[in-house]
Each structure stands twice: as C-alpha cells, then as structure tokens.
Image 1 (cartoon, helix red, strand yellow):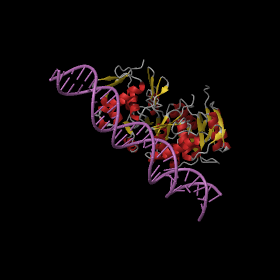
Image 2: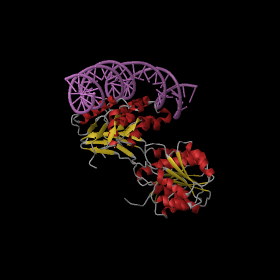
Image 3: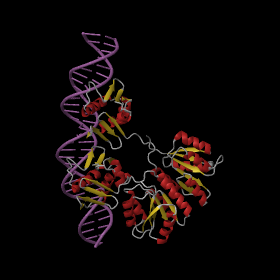
Length: 231
Length: 231
DNA sequence: AAACGCCGTAAAGAAGCCGTAAAAGCTGAC
DNA sequence: GTCAGCTTTTACGGCTTCTTTACGGCGTTT
C-alpha cells in the first residue's frame, strides 16, 4: 500500500516527455512513459497508474482512440494534452471520457495543480476490505474499532496493530517476522517475546483460551493465524 | 433517487447567471442559483447539489473563502469561473479544492463538456453531511455553528476546526497527524500538545468528563474519535 | 532422563502520553 | 496605541503503555 502515485505519460515527443518526467518526478510522483498509443495502453494495463496524461497527437493512432479503448476497462483519471485549442476538439475529448484538457503551451504550475486536483478527486482505487468478522469478533479497519459481540474492546496501539494485521490476512498465516517488522519496525525482528506478550493480552481481552485457541491460533516457530471468516 | 443532476451556480452577475441557467437547463440539469457567497453556502447545505459552479469575484466574500468553507464539509465537485487568467490564481484555486477552472470568456460547449466530465467522475456525490448530531451536540458544518441542547456554544477557530474534523468523520478515528496537518498545517505535525489543550477546552465547553468521555473519546497515542451518531 | 527451544504468564521499572494550569506572545478590533 | 481574546509556550502530576526481567510448562531432541 504505497502512497506514492504512479502517473503514466503517453506522448511521442521526447522533449515533452522529458519535461513532464522532470516536473512530475520533482513532486515525488513515479513516472511511467510510453511513446505510442499501443504502448500506452499496454503500460496502463500492466502498471495500473493513478493518473494518465495523454497527448492527442500520436504517431500510431489518434489520442481519442486511445482514450476510448482505455475507457472500455479503466476509470483512471485522464488529463488530455494538445496543441490544438479548438473548442470542438476539447468537447470531443471530454465527452470521450477525459477528465481534464490542457492546451500547449501550458504553465507547469497549473499543470501540476490540475494533476493534484485529479488525484485528490479520485478515491483510493484499492478499496481494501474495510471490516473482518469472525464469530463474535469484528475488526473494523476503516473505523479502527474492534467489537466482541457488539461490545467495543479497548486495545492499545500495538495490540490493535497486531490484530489488524492478522485480520487483514484472516485465515492465512502471518509470520512473526512480518508482524514484528510491521508493528515494531525492522530493527526488532528478533524480539519475538514482545509478540507473545501482546498476543497473550489479546487472547485475554477477546476471551480466547490459550490452551485451545479458537480465534488466534499459534503456529509454533512460525507465526499466528486468525480464524478464517465464513467467506 | 432522481437522475436529473442539480447544479448550483454562485455568481453575482445576473447576466452570467441567466446565461448559465439557460445553457444548463437546455441540457436537462436542474439549476439552483445564488448571488452571494453566504447564499451559495446555504443553498449547498440545503440542496446538496451534484456540482457547483463558483465565480471568483463575489460581492460579500472572495470565491476562495467560499470554496474553503464548502470544502470543510462537502466533497461536491466545484468548477471555478473567473475573468482573471493568472496561473498563480488557478493554482491557488485548484489546490484549495476546486476540480476545474475556466476563465471567461469561455465557450458554452466546452463548459458543458467540462460539466459532464465532472459529473461523470463523481459517482457517489452525496456523501456529504452538512450537519452532525450526537446526543445533545449539534455541529452544523455549513453554517459553522455548534449548539448543545439548542444552546449555541462559542468556539474559537482552532476549537471549531478540530471539532468539525471530528464531526465530519463521526464515529471514525481521526489521527493526531490528520488533525494537526489539517488545522495547524503540515509543519506542526509533531506538536501534539496543542491538540491536548484544544480538546481539553472542547470537552470543558461541551460538558464532557475527561475521565470518562462520552463525546470525544481519546485513543491513546493515536488520535481522537467523536461518538458515532445513531446511524 | 536431561537438555533444549519455544510458548505463555506475571510483575516491576522505564518511558511515553494525557490532561490541566498558568504565563508569555501574538493578532485583530476598536 | 491599547486592549481583549486567542494561541503558543512552559511546567508538572498522574496514568497508561511498553519494555525488561524472571519463571514454569510442554514437546522434541540428544
């Protein structure tokens, strides 16, 4: 779940690509490039970018065609780029599914601001599973709230972090290293005692019998596993 | 759930309003009008439009101020309108939360196309609540007013900003970082003391017992959470 | 059987965090 | 320019959480 945004630039002119690459990279975006419509569609499919900047004039096919084909399967925001300023042109592009339209020459600052606006408007594409429910236990990742039979359970930071990680991979095994790296940081990967203490308290708070755990199962020498939800 | 989109036009010039009204109505949009910033915010709160067209130059207050206040509680797409074409101006507006920016004079067709693009991009428009009510506490985001059992409560700017953010995410946990970044700016993310002081005063003014808070719950080391409304 | 590795529990000390109060600094209104 | 109100700074007591340390049980290995 990285929060660095990926932007796909589709343009045949190397100068423009370089210009955009430098401008965007300076804002900590990860830039993917393509110099043809076909290549652009391929990159879009492969990389799943958060935003596409698409030039109208392309050697192999018209930018409109690329946009149309992209829109057949992807809702990713698209910013169109063009030298032509004709109004009909803009209308065509916007109605074909573009989210914004900028005519060259344009100011860098404005372009970057429009990029920010488009990224802001598009919600997280990865609508991760926001709540997990097993038996009476409910882990609500969006609300950061844990309830047991509708009763809220108070958890400390580490307790919640561990439980949330187990819940995010409910049913699957999570290794001690994964848990320690995620919750305590990469420098504490060997302190497996911490884990035992936190898991102990979790089981206590969740009413889980350590001798025969029904919720948090321990895989000796490897890690822990939260009971799988009923699918 | 009617599928005719409501568009709110905020502009003081009657000529422009008429022009927009006719243009938009011809496309089967329902047009709501306001000629001042205050009136616009009120209409936005009352009608929950699907799109807002906002002129920068308004008699009572700057368009930026209106946008900022609107963005405190509503994610509705906003198209800014202006005679000024300065790039800095556009950047400011877009970064303040505008989704598009068109400079007068503009072509109708292009404007309509941009309207279509904005409406298309936002599938779930009315996720905005202009007011939140929990127990006796009522936070009116649109009017910037807080009442406790019908009695108005006087809050300072920071106090209101913090409470508004909690109310906008009522029931969900808001981290200290989110609050600090939003209210004090990105440079003060570490000054968690500020938060404690403001929250302390809020609880005092709202009659919330800090030892056993019923309204503003603290999640130690993480953030705060306003009690969830009864759904 | 003894030794070892791993797990779980308990308790105490350390560290960090929360809430309050009050003083100092700043800002906008008049 | 003054003043009031708001914000930031500073200081401190109390509490929660985390870390450390110690110990006993269970299963496997030697």
